[in-house]
Length: 494
Ligand SMILES: *[C@@H]1O[C@H](CO)[C@@H](O)[C@H](O)[C@H]1NC(C)=O
Image (cartoon, rainbow, N blue to C red; front, side, top):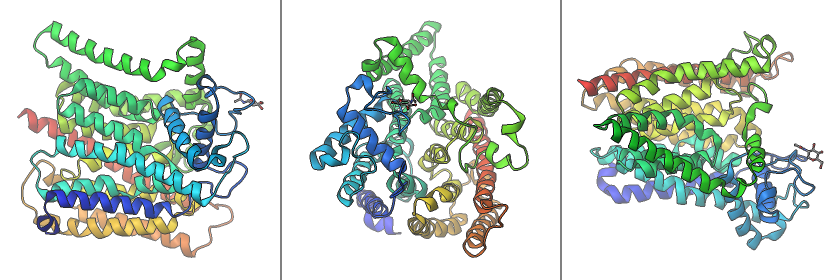
């Protein structure tokens, strides 16, 4: 109703303005590791990378030297993250040079430098994430109503987990997610080379974007195979291969000679030095670890193989589907499916990685109204132990209330929405009950954690409950996305 009165452009501007205000509001709160020497947290890591990249020659960025002790938040993201640190570092150096003074600025926290740091994340969203979401809206919602277009924008820009992690906890996921969304939009509008290049940028900002690689690979390969002749198929694959190599070469240029330097950087990016999982992450290994002691039953190498096997096996159906019949929406579903496989089963998963499964679901919000309303809330719930540690409980409650205020009435009304589409049958039966149950359980855990003392022998029982409950939701969502993919592919071929 509101949307109809406003008109499309005004609604778009309003949602973007509100989403920026909320980002700035969340930014007023605390961040990861605030006031916690000696290592602080993710905020300090980002600040430290600005310090290192601004002051040291580029070939030393990833190298352990006297000025760059890698044991203290050594750079472990690919080069575009480092270039971004350099760029924002230059800006901060201009405004407040002490904030990134070499070696002596560790743990530097003033309110003015915090403001500058916060703005750098907001600007990243303005420059990358928001334009990418708008491009996706043009590409994927060609014949949607104004209401649906507004809902998609709202879901992608205001889903609580992404806002809380980037603008509260402090990270720049909006950049890598934005590049991936831009890549999907480009591929969907037939600009496959641009899409491939953008996806490489995403991959070179955060290696986690690898979660999407099977989806892009399968979809693009599927499209190449649809070409009429053998030669044109090979030509199409070769062109994309060339774009990928050229993009990587540009990004990695300063690190390629001598080759040992590139190997040194690569070894910083591989997480195999660490354990099966860290903290409380709602994936298969962590959720089942109270029952099955994975870390004791298997050696690290066996675990790595087990994880790789389980991940590949579970993402295979979606990949096969996209190779056989690539479609625009299928690409987004495959991105979600593949991200879920990696999140649930791969090695060394971070709780924040759920953002990767979340993005394509919010981009498909008009097609998956129930999932797009429910999954973001569960994702925020799943990272609550982290947010609580960061002092972001208040921001968490505020953003979830806002989310519920806008999505729950729509859920209640949705049965009135007409149109029997392929997802309608699946979503309209029974989900409200599941909805009520899952909201009730989540509130129950929060209430119990608020009023009960955890037993002495199980101090982390509530975090473990959050993990287990979130895992069940994510596993169900992963299965649901998988089923949708095949149904959609089936209906398309009829
Ligand atoms: C880096 O060098 C410091 C000494 O300068 C040393 O203590 C540390 O263990 C080294 N770290 C790595 C990751 O090589």
